[in-house]
Length: 444
Picture 1: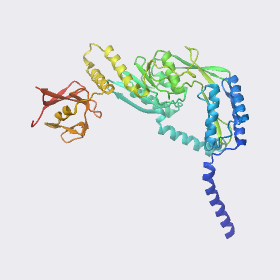
Picture 2: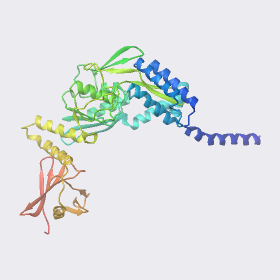
Picture 3: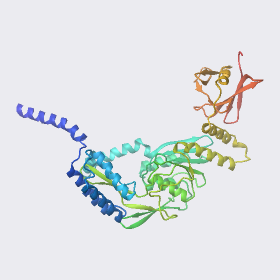
Picture 4: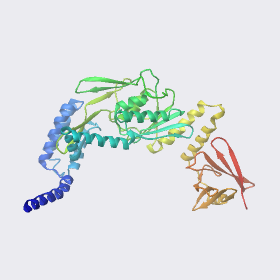
């Protein structure tokens, strides 16, 4: 009995020691390379949206294999990357991707065989979805009553995802303009596109897109929804931010609104992937994402595959948000010209312009502003001015002009330094409501 326990213990120790080696083993043999290519070729020929292109891709892979182009590759990750490059070189389809993912494939297959594993997989996905808040990363009201939504993915419309969308869109429902940031959005579900877009139109249906599916050899259509929870904003000006990383469903959203003339696109040309599909298992260690359909816009009768979506205003992605803020404020000022309550728009405009065109103030002038102003103090430290009131938080002052400063953390307040006969005599507090207050300089 003792001998059996000893053998069992040695076996278990051996298993524990062996597991890391197996999990980390990304080596690949010539036989497995051929097996992967054969399987991928079968999947492409049966599923890829363009059958004739599928044949060209599989022929190319087989020629590459016969010509020993893959012999020097010893790592499975590198092999997956090379296969991706080869099939994309033929198809120009950026959705086509081969992945080395033995753990993910094992989880997926176990979920298909076991109810317990299936539940575990679903719970893991749910946790991931919740952690990312279903793509609704950030929603806030910017200066000038401009709504901002940072949307990092178009998730499928489950009960929770739909609730997140409704809560976000209703939070932004009283803004005078709306910026939707898709610069880090890699795509997702047309159903979420349909839901979010419905908030930008009235109850009458609007035709958004068509999809062709190879397996069924038919087209389906997407339209705006007749009912949504909350307030519709058919007249709110919309600005969509794009980058070269904006991809797939994020491109569809942009392309739809561009062709419907519902939004102004600002940023970079998008990635250029218009073919929906799904991941298929090729072998125990390799999977491939295969597009089995294509988008067909009802206005253009084509899509953005390989070309990307062209923005109305081309700027580097990092400048897109400030550009959109400026354009929105210019539009709102023009729209509200002559009205009494435009001060807050002018305030916001001045702030954006100072960010886009930073001002430099001579160090001698900055030093001259340091001093006590009643309950307020101005400090000069290491080339920068700081503001403090009655011993509270100390804030850095950012120049807007030679004598006016803003505080990044307190956008509703600014400081203007006052002079008489070239001498600093006081400071004025400026507020986004139009109110001002003033303090004389003490001591000097």
